[in-house]
Image (cartoon, rainbow, N blue to C red; front, side, top):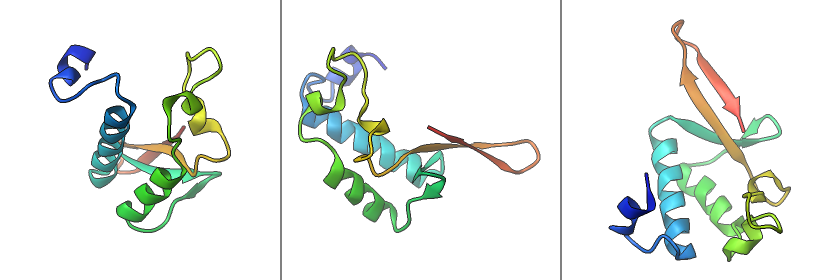
Length: 102
């Protein structure tokens, strides 16, 4: 998706808009079985609402806290204060699910 498409729905330069879009995407991915949230080889427990609440509570209040000093890379997801990363789920031909931990 490009910014022109997203701008039809809100200001892509506004941190609160980007944060809402991001959390809506996470909810969609969790509800549809595309991913789980986990850290240190353990999945978060609780309902999707409870997991997202944990993330929302820990999520930085401004975008700069998410970025490296040069502003190029999002690093918060790799820091200890991030409660979990994404575990992408890929169904395999044999019926198993491959888990890609990020």
